Structures are given as C-alpha cells and as structure tokens.
Length: 272
Image (tube, rainbow, N blue to C red; front, side, top):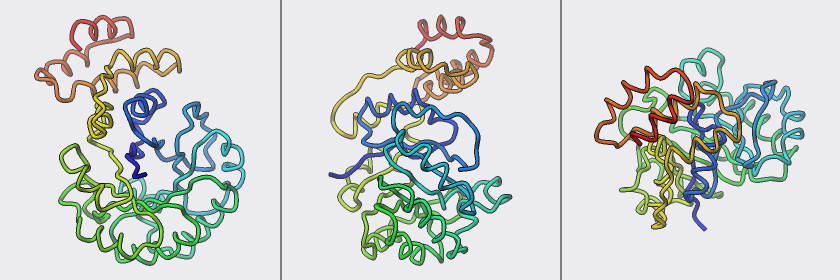
C-alpha cells in the first residue's frame, strides 16, 4: 500500500501535531532531526519514525538500542540544506562523503530490524548514495531540489522519475506535495511526503484520502495539555493554524500580543 507521510520538520513536529496528523490519515509521521549524541528527553509515545543526523558513527549504537522499542522506525538525513547543516557538515553537506554515509547506514541497520529510510536531495551523488542505501535501507526518500536551491525554485520531477526507475527499493517523493498533485504523484512513486503543506493543516491527510477530517486547533490544545508542551511552542502552532483563514494576518498580529495559555484559550474559542 502506498504511504502518505508527514515529512520530518524540526519545529512543527511536536508530539501533539504528529498525533493529529496520524488521526487525520497520515500513514507514518517523522520527528525532526535528532543527533544520536543528544541528551534531550524525547517524547515518543506516539511511536514516530525517528530521524537522525550526524557525520560519524559515534553514539549511534547506544542511541538506537535505547530508543528502538519506542519508535516505529528510523531515518537518516542526508538532505538538510540549512546554514547550520553547512557549519557542522551534516545533511546535504555530507552527500559527497560516501564512505562515511555507508558507515552510518550500516551502523544504524546493525542495531535495528525496524523500518529504515534515508532522505536525500538531487545531486551528483544521488545515484551513488542510492546504491549504498539499497544495501541497508527499506526505503529511500528523494527531494529533487539541489542543496543550492534550498526550498526555493522548482523541484525536478523528471529527475525523481528517472531516480525511481533506477531504484531497487521503494522511493518516496518529497518536494511541494499538496492536495492538487498528490494523486498523480502516488501513481508514480511508492509514497509521498508532505511537509510545508501540512503545517497548521493536519486535515490535508484526510482530504487526500477522501476521508474528510475535522481537526481543529482546540484538538491540538487538548493534546498539548496532556503532553505538557511549552507555551512558546503552543503559540507557534497557533500561528500555523491561522493559515488559510480569511483574516489570518489580523489573527497573527493579535496572537503576538498574547502572554499566557489562558489568554490563548479564550482567543482561540472566539476566533478559530
């Protein structure tokens, strides 16, 4: 069965948002990037796919074994184009280090039998990384923009189609996926990954599956309370949930002034 997946995003993908996307119809949900040397406490009660970033194998064995029972699977990021990724040589800035990529994928696979994917970008190294991934991964995710494009410009669908034909493992497509193009993309690829179009809009998964869901920001607030999400993050998500509303600009201006959770609850009840 072809999968419709919440893409890994660092800020939006808290546990409450992941649960809402799953409730709406997402088949799999990914966390944002986590370094295996991180001591950060993770809330994985929804059993997401946990995405790793690093440029060495140090810490992978211990981290994967510690969290393996708490997740549905694993992903390794070789696609992030951010300035931070450039500074520490991770994500797309290690795409030419094929030996280390293989070392890392091998180390992750040695320590888990669960679903394992790798996320990459269009580059001169894409096909070489594919051949490595075929040895260790269940799935490869292709975002057909170059590192230099970042998230701007047009995703190269033709490149992704050719890449899919060359692959011996399932290929998930990532890059500007939305309601309008999702059905066509699902005819070509083994699944689609939705990122920016899902921010503040978990119902997109239900609409793509023709299963109209009616998830609201009040549903997010209920889960935020349950999982003790910080007010700063809740307010950030409130801003996201204004997307698509006629008075979105005015709502965001008002949200900026809100100082605590009680004020926010009153505001949401009146305006969302």
